[in-house]
Image (tube, rainbow, N blue to C red; front, side, top):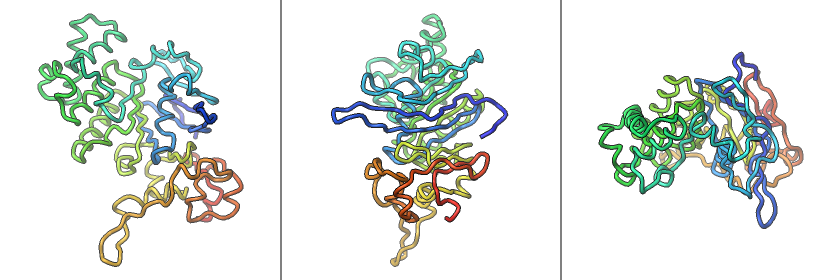
Length: 335
């Protein structure tokens, strides 16, 4: 995938291992992706595909001592031009990156915000830690950040607690918290899952505006391809811990090559088929991710309508369809 500009984030053959009482499991295996400055890479897949584990590995937040990066690299380009492999940075060293250069918006803001501190205190605390501002300057920046994410009457709302705000407002607070130190990379893990459609559209527009204004790279994690079509430049599709397809957003939607990507697109409401009673029925993907994790061949083969016997035996490698389009399927040319 040859692009002129060096990537802001480049993950190469990442493997993550969790040690359990019944033995080790590898929920992420051989994942490679990149995020460029000023652009959005969407990481897509069903629950259990390894998306959130990948993001936790980037942030150095894998649960210790049970979780660890087993192999691969996570190269990040810092503001000073230094390229650091985050997979090799010790836990204490990651504090220099989290919040200041890499920030994350989690799925559920109510469980991510401290219920006993005001919104303003929580933002100011991070600002004081990373930007070394005094108490009053940090409080002023907290108010400015709330205004940046379009929270009305920001000065008053800064003195409120999380429970006093709606879900949409709490998610805006999470974005303000993430943006408070002007990070180079923003990881958004399902940031609109619990929100209604109207609020979801506002949050997506807000993240996209901040990306453009700050030349920030965004890794947007979601299972919603409708959201991907609105916000992404590049899409990486994961299944059972692996990358199965990577392409530009237009190419992926107009020319999907992997059967799993095609199945996900078929699940969109606009692709619903009309049944005998005249009602439209959304096409579901049969089976589940958990049932195919230990398959010796293609991980998607047990659920794939195009699978043949050879798919069950040989594990496919990523194949280049075009210079910027890759697919993990041995039969993509025949589909």
